Length: 486
Image 1 (cartoon, one colour):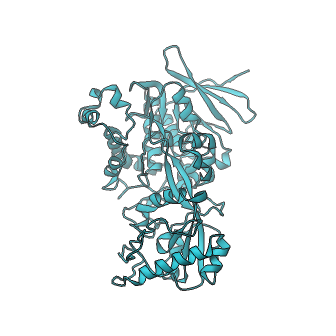
Image 2 (tube, helix red, strand yellow):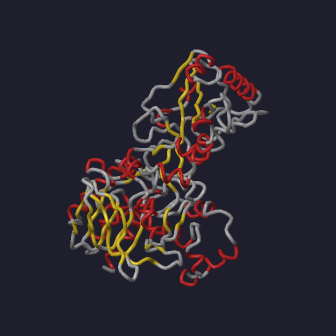
Image 3 (cartoon, helix red, strand yellow):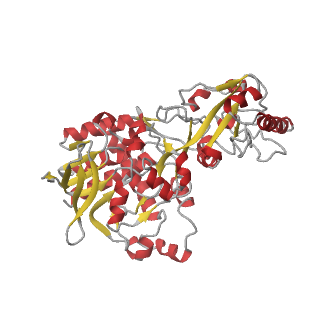
């Protein structure tokens, strides 16, 4: 028998930054709010719990200068210019096919950018403090604002605020479907508790439950069979199994975002700690299991290029590569900031010994290093500058290395295995500037909202340091709107 829980105006799915922002803002607006979280209380918070929560902002009130431009440059595929003409008009004049077009529309991106500053100020009212702290990126092209204490500080502050104003939490509870009335409006959630007992929670619904990096089936369906070589970047991602996206699509929601892609980050597969990133590869070379280089390791600052390079790693044999370094890595100040694996490097007194430990062909790796070293020695016109683009490049080598190209010739030699993690998936739902989910005709589905990773907004290349902002901004917008019309 279904257990019906009464007296809620808003039901929020997910307890990360998106869900908590939605729950708190809805409760502040006077709504009675329930929040469902698949994880137990000690693991609540999704991916937000484990992230540093970088924010693409140049101050506590302003996004970076390239914020909207980066989204525009990665706004979709080959978009029809005749359709895009309509976006120069007011949103209400857009045809339905444009409102539901799978692209990052300028109306939404502009609203996103304009709401980041006020949202940070709102977060500060719960005691969260922000600063420009050191990051994993030894070289960077854009500033990143951080909450002191990272994503966990956001989770703890918002959860405490939610508890204080009466939001009811349902832990170890999974949303399974949406309830609708005869007019198609969403009126509540079907769910199941940790015993598998069915639960019905009435109210408008805000989906803030992440993407599908925790679902091998959905990853394979959308990303392809090579998804076998992916894993979530942190424990929170395993809880993101895509139900929020699926249940909305099942009732006619419009999809948006690049379903076949994801945010890639290089990690050490030997490590089980959250986000065991390996961002020091620009100072060495990357080789695949054949012992061969396959990419320019340093075409730009690491914050700007790591995703594209990690995608190339993903496409190598068995989805793995190795960062090959020598003792000169010690010339890089604080290089361990860019290395979060808790595993020691694999070492060798010679390249051949290192190759044996990596189980790559020794002759191939030795030839790769010889060719690389020769290309470095042919260009000594520059000076090595570890913390800025130094244009110390190889010459006559393919693929080239554009910066920090120094010979690998000072033992001991060491290596870190690197795979692509799936930080977040790109495919999700189409929403408007009020975070209302749109149907396939561009009409808001009454009573249904989405925030965070459930919102499809990214294409091709992730706009770095915007996922936590996306959760906070659209969560807050969804909660405010849901409470206003409750």
